[in-house]
Length: 288
Length: 301
Image (cartoon, rainbow over all chains, first blue to last red; front, top):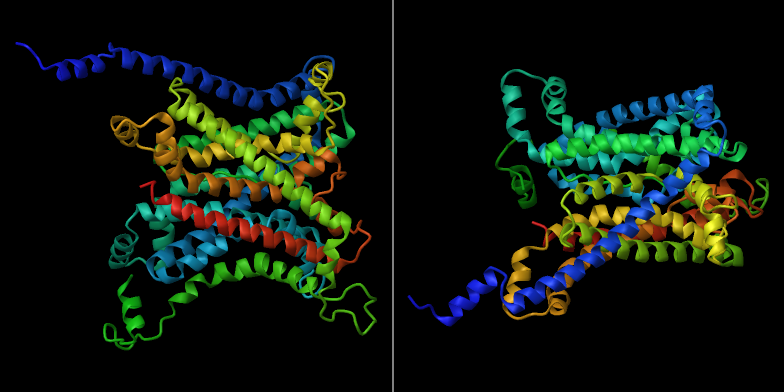
């Protein structure tokens, strides 16, 4: 019935009764305090500017009047609607461009993959300020004077946003395609008599729903509130509106900033919800 | 590799006779055309302008001829300063934001904090890394600006923070920098397996030795790569800086803003050179990031 001393020692350490284990435990306890402090600093960094902004908006009397003024301002809803509309058009255009390309590259042109991927990453190298600079200079005169008209400027804005969405959309779609068996799906649909169009619209797109949604929310979060490109193209968008308000009014900009934060939160919350369902790795970054 | 590429690389089209030339590349034409029209061509326009003499009148025969003057003009004090300031701000916020973001992610994943804090932190990080530009600048103005909510408090503590200054801008940039670090580094920290720590402890390694010889070498490519990405993230930022300082701070994106508006005293060619300098720095940054990311992925399977 007697055990070897080593065995007893190892059992002791398993039940955390030995002096060594106790010492380790207390050291981890002290470490945990440090991590709590780190977390607290991060927590404060997140919330102090938000609480400050909220408190500032409450300086206007009566309470919440800043919010009432903002919501009554037709420009607020007008610019927000415009930015949402542009965002939706961007997402649709980007999907139509990216999905067939990514699908085709995966199916038929795997050798071109690094080159296509390189192009989709270029928007990281060419930041929005440079992009809009180039677009304005290229499309202000003949042969394509797009920047001269309202409609042309809208086209340029959507085009610029589609470019900004490249990294996120391509990545989301490519990850989605990796998860489905593209080759078998293609052969199955074609053997049932489907053409390329039917294949894309009725097989590939529905299978990429989750990926497209995640790319879409990310794009929306970036586009609604984007300032740099919209300002230089003189578009009546939400970002320039907030900036204009910031220069003219006292408390209303605080209210709009918080509303804008809330919108970002909603977009990211939906993104997180989708991400949890799909277990996909989602990349997040914005245009600052 | 597919069968097609195998045969073509060997130069022996035996597999599919009669289909030596494929029209498959046509499938990427719409995408490439779009990217060319709205991304590549506009950038090439700026690039070609940066090598042209645009300082003289359009009627002058020297107008549009090749020159490197636009690039040498970047050494003018205020333009060179704008580059230095941009680099300094990006470096400071990348290193500080990277370090703090890493500690924060580590605290929540490995630090023994309650489980529910992890998804909460990741959601906040997603929001905060996207909450930038005008609303972010305004939020900092309302909190720390001349009539900000916290201003009386920090003045009482003897701190005077000028909202138009570099430190204020860095403080604002950090708001989206460290959350981005949290988002990108979290999977890398998840990749640190428990077995590795247990194995080193069983062999008698101290916590320091574990970090020095196991964890840090594995994390280093991810850490460096992400810090570099944060650098690029700050370097390209325009809206936050413009809104916070009212265009008063001298950084590259503000200089380019002036060039686009036509407020700058110097000629267009210099504006194009300014833009190209920025593209060059961003290019190096992203290339370094991609390289390190590929090395980091080895450990994340």
